[in-house]
Image (cartoon, rainbow, N blue to C red; front, side, top):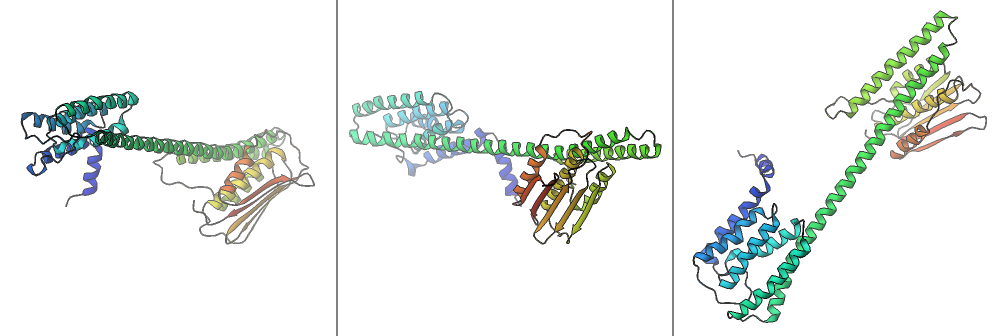
Length: 383
């Protein structure tokens, strides 16, 4: 059996000249059929003349150049116009003369340069053609010539409109592509910020604490082991992020709230006292909500390490049937020594993530000087 889809794909891969050639050849063959003699486009209303050798040349001029109507529209327009003029003066009125409006539409669509000059030259050439037809006996009135000219102008106008529509569609696609690239860059920047900032902050805090443990080898060894473990996790997360950027990678795993225990334990090892509580039952298909909830907790704990190191921190996650509620609160009495500065991008990125799922996000200081982050994330959004 013939695989029509494969045939279609092969046809689309052919050069544009190959794809345009059959129409011109078909028009030439049809024009040679006796039943269609004198059925072509007419201007001047001259009596039909029987075919001679020049008639076949006229058919060739009007049909064969259609193969290059998109590749070389100016050449095609010139040759077809020449054939059309000969056809009207010699009064063959071959069926192939119907190619004139076709080539005008094609030229209006695909001609790139000297478009106005082309219109002026075609219009100027029409005047002597009308005079010549009148001189050799045409009975057409001025109104008829004017209507025919408007019909040709309409064909060009259709081509110009198609060209404009195609340009608008290309601009729309370019804009969509640029918007998509910008959104992808923003997403990658968020992921890098979340992964790198959290792990590096933990490592800096752990290393800073290790400086004061030189007199306690056991505690120093534990602190350095924590730095090593954090670095390894950072490398693993960065490799996973690079996998996300690889279009050939199919086994993509995003962090979820199921890994919050590991995240909290890592933060505790960095010297931050964290109280963690979960309420409710996780939905089976929370989708992107779990990933966003994980990022909210991760960024909040990172900020706690940077700006309130040593201060009691509480993480509460409540699972509902339609949403996940996250609250991370930190006291304000801890020391800020050794905390690397922040850019403020983290909270802004969290707000954008939550808003994208139709949720609510808030972050601000409490009356006692602490800081609290709250997020309501609708569940069930497919990732």
